[in-house]
Length: 108
Image 1 (cartoon, one colour):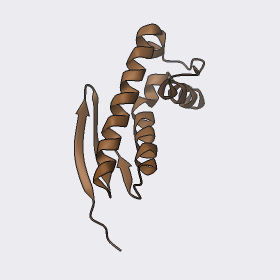
Image 2 (cartoon, rainbow, N blue to C red):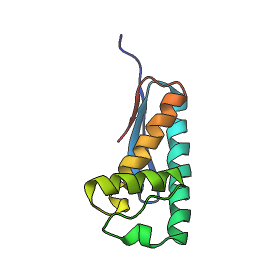
Image 3 (cartoon, rainbow, N blue to C red):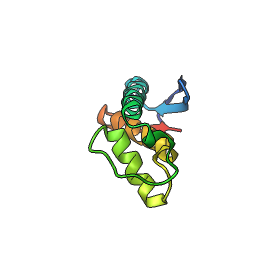
Image 4 (cartoon, rainbow, N blue to C red):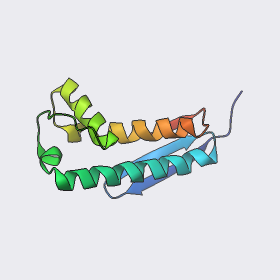
């Protein structure tokens, strides 16, 4: 069965993406998730500037979740954590969309 999909381009500071969902609530959920996690990352970066600039893996913090997941991904790829920022923001937004009841959840 083909569903109607909602699609929206979204930009917040340097973050730019397209959000696709089968429910309108999914779009707003993704936008809120991206903003929330981006703000958490910015606050963490102010307190730990090395996190923003290092080109090598660093230990994962316990919080915020966005920084923790970025550091874990960076460790696997042997790069700095900022290499994972787009993927982690998208992944967290998709998880929130699914938790909001979406069956189709894309953030690219």
